[in-house]
Image (tube, rainbow, N blue to C red; front, top):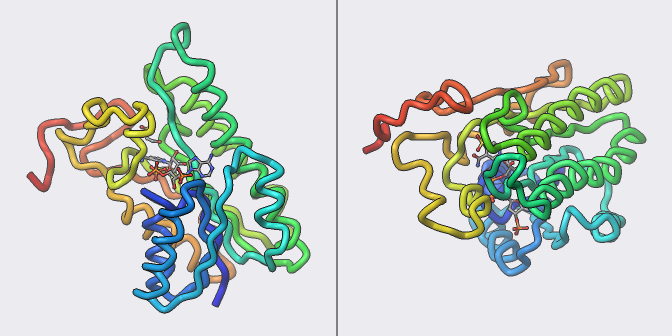
Length: 252
Ligand code: NDP
Ligand code: 8X3
């Protein structure tokens, strides 16, 4: 079976993506920083789906750790650059510079390190697929979203640039661009663990992590002659980053 490497698989979209690929019997390499949680999830996948799961514990912001983690890997068939986060929600004059650096280092530099390390073996083999997890925040900006939106605009630019650089080398490049997604720790991380502030999905039904995972699986399973460039998706009550029908959840 093809080997799928997913960064950021301890929660949210990455975890759901690992599960949908495991259900189809793919060989998985899952990564994140929280070792215990990653290992427990790998055990669950192995027992539940009888698939091969390797874990790699490292921080995508640490270039040396990325190099060390992947140096002995064979060719990867699909690299899913999912690890990412938002920190804070503040106007540009009040933003926390540590938050900015964390987002830039994770969402842009981490994605670049992983791509630079994994893509040469794909090029050598003349096949492979890189799928980046972008966002509606890469299509438009919203108040106080400044640096997070900038990092996701960068992901969008990099997907397009990678495609130009790799299409003649047999490598597919795609992205998925979701709006709000629940069953993730995204809001909790953004608001530094503040559970009250993280209650942002109470008045509408956003996408669920599995919705995005299934889109990623769809992208990965297209036949050789098809490259899906992007899937832009939102919950049906969300029409843009700022236009959200908050009249109540659909499952209330
Ligand atoms: P979660 O917080 O649930 O998951 C983020 C994952 O990334 C975790 O597994 C986390 O693992 C990992 N991660 C974070 N930082 C690092 C790091 N420095 N090194 C290694 N792994 C890291 O959030 P989501 O599932 O929502 O986020 C996944 C992606 O989806 C992100 O790129 C996000 O920007 C994007 N996205 C999210 C949306 C949403 O509304 N939720 C909408 C659109 C896009 P660990 O902490 O164990 O390292
Ligand atoms: C996550 C969606 O709107 O919170 O990328 O930026 S949003």
